[in-house]
Length: 156
Image (tube, rainbow, N blue to C red; front, side, top):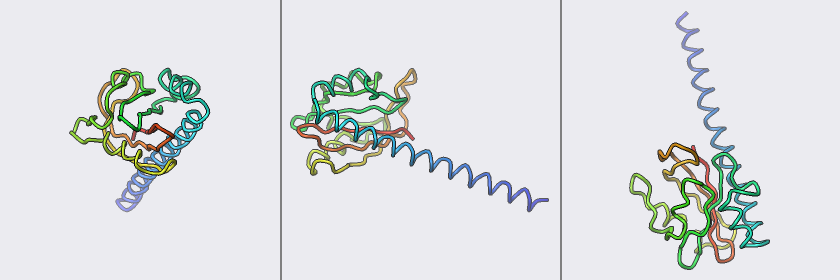
């Protein structure tokens, strides 16, 4: 009887862990896919793309996935799809810190120094779109696109 219970508990734990790992892999894949779409939009028409990102139009706000872009020269944020984060437009990305004090903006901006198309991956805490402003774990992928650094992240 105890053996059966232990076996069931072990199976339940394995299933729960594998579900979480799958969800994270799916979130990363969706973020990378949206980033590819955002890069294509910027290359096609930068002004229109930034406007769509800021408005969350054209499929650039999907649940809690959204793009953000920064001027690769001065580090100023020029677009962010998260309706809760509009106040950071115009700020220098390199000055942003999460609630633990981590300077995640410096790490994201490092993509400006890499060849175009190469991804930088950064983990930090940030609030999701919606009513709850509580920061949660997030992973963002950023890349250089012309004179911008653009990124998309997923929440864990």
